[in-house]
Length: 413
Image (cartoon, rainbow, N blue to C red; front, top):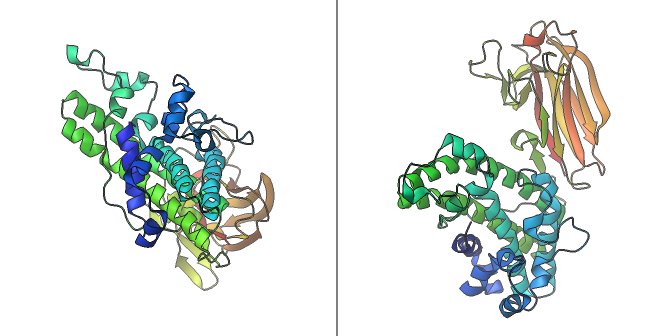
């Protein structure tokens, strides 16, 4: 993503803030433009310090990270964009510096640190960064360059990255959390979703460039820029709200794990992953999902949750699992209900297991379709990982019927 696009993200994010915060920060367009490009301005080893000092004599304050972080610059973070959980320390650092700047009355520093965060958001939604193959091997095979001299120097990454996107209309910013740790965790999850979504733009953008249709390519670039700006605006707003003291950190809020992608998963290929709010009868695999149904104390009820199917055992253990990384100390409880689908799981049998930091803390024992769903309510303490696992309990004889369901899996503050 080139300089103007990064600037568009930061400017768009700032302009979406409530008027009271824009008046308080009083940032001009030049500061916003530069802040969105601070990492690019200063982590270029070929640029002399004299040139960097001419832009900002304190540039190291914003772009050189402390030894406690496993990276010197944002662009050299030792994990890929696809491992957003590993990037949470980066987000926590930038968010923390933003809050510290406000407490110190240094609004310009708040904007500069926010600009570094906005740059990370832009890199995370840029299709050229997150395409199916950033080394271009697969892209070159799937979409070979036209046999024309004008495309002799076309580069799948840099030529696509050079397309400048404007920032579209943003929604009013939303509160992401009540603390730095929670905000970084929520942000990492939303960035992960943005990466998955924005990969869809790589193929049509390249095709538009091959067709010589720059107008279409630039139109395609708008949505990734807008998503990055929304993420940035939400993060800025959250830090401003935390600083203002208006965030009620004691409120009994919860996070619905149905809607947060797991950080690690193991599923049978028949399902291909957890099914939102239902299970699929298999085989065949192309049938619509049946809404989740569990046997509860007041009868069989439709419930929301995640439907899963333990692995057949042909290529791995007869189980399935989902693991989420969680910020230590932010959430107090985990709650859910677990049982077999009350319509589809005839003859099936499984056991449910909950693990915290890899250690089992709850199990249902063997369950069948005739058993009432079990209620789970666990203290989380300072654990940093929760795993929901389902294991076959019929020695592999009922694979097609082991339709298990985790209802309303919630992390509660």
